[in-house]
Image (cartoon, rainbow, N blue to C red; front, side):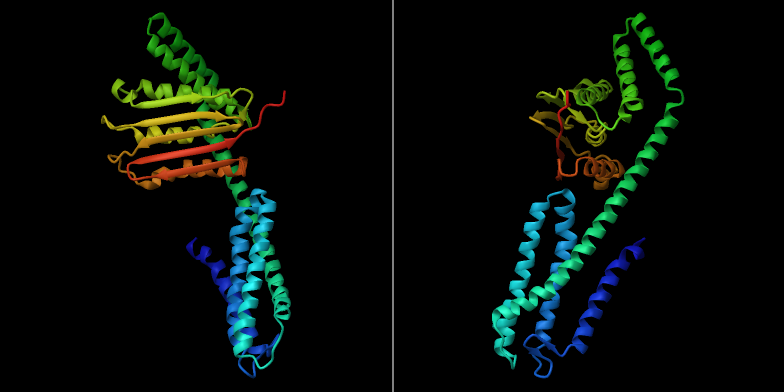
Length: 349
């Protein structure tokens, strides 16, 4: 895998190197520069370096950062700015340095700009072809990976279900037994667990679900976590939901991995354990903020905070909300904090 990852840079290096040396050996004139008076060599070097900069900034930064997120106007403006900047820098170096000091023939500044427009337009065309193709391949790979992850998850769910009706009937029997025995605590736990199972097995298969149901799932999950803790630890957990979240839909199970991570890494058998989970709404924007004190007693490392589950949810966010979300993860010395913003659409009634 490591060798495979290094093949593309080697190919690029070989192509650029071959192109440079072919021009170095074969081209005798370039505008007002001549091989016979030695004026051609220095302009060739910086023209090549500027061409490389134009090619890769456009292909590897502007296209994936803006074009792939449908920010077409911003991409177009930045691309033109980059293109014009490279042409002007190249022409300025050529005219005010190389031509003035080394070239035996003089040429107007605008003639040099015209020459650089031609060469840099060719480089930009290659960059567009390479960048858009690479972006398309990466998008397909991401979709295939997400599809594979979805199928794997569904298979795990199928294996876990066994016979969901049997499980629900058993839970109902346990709930009835707890109520009959006046064990309200156990009955409450069974009821919440039944709600979690029903949501995961049945309702979360939809592409989008009512946000109310997702919040209810989170409520039940957090309440179950609190019930298994001591009162002292449970009092360190702050959880709040603010704002109006009626008539909104969201991709199911998109928030819970961040909340699961808080309980997984933030619970310590000490009085210092601190957990804060906040979900609030500003117009059509959902904001999730989590904060937990790091568990230094755990044998894990920072990789735990960005493991497979977190990697998958980042990919789901990128696929489902490509330009409608912002995710900030701060892994500080003592605290781990997450802020997620998602723009949601109102249900069309």
